[in-house]
Image (tube, rainbow, N blue to C red):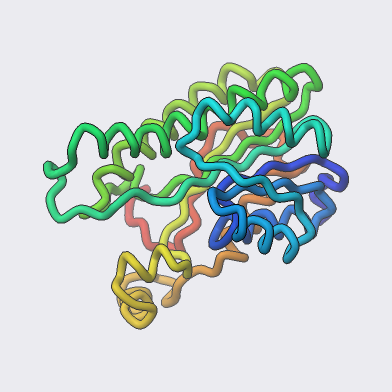
Length: 249
């Protein structure tokens, strides 16, 4: 299938490794002109060279710098057609009641305000051109909250609700907004959650109907479809990519 995004400008945040990098690579393979961000200048330069993208160093917690970054991307590559917001997970918890106000504020800024600020900055141009694709990388924990992840459970749920609301508002302007909810995908973050690669693999064999972890490339393929011209009638959804692990309907 031709995704119809050759020559389109795509911005993928949090893309020096893991899911973000896999998404950027998938979009670049479809002929998109891809910009990627990461807080580490060294890491983003390496990743950009690897996939033929343009790299920008940016900390997702720097909210004031987001409009500036979007302007820089558009200056170098042109108006943004595709925006994928991806943010790393917050700290794990042994006690859901044990976080300070500051830790809650930081999680809110990274997981809620940061993706929404990117959307706010990119949206006017998309609406004026009557074409845009926005995808937020969320988590299945917005449907089934996970123990030890209260900061992620709460804040990612808020972002999902906001994106659903915005999707309805701009649906007639040719702009779609969707969330993709990864289950257990083979990334460093997942291995951290389970203590080791072996621990994650054992969990997958026992708990996931597919009997294995998902690959970043499989997840990225789902995101790439939602970024495509072919997905013009898909908006406001939360697409679960989890090998059948979620039991809810």
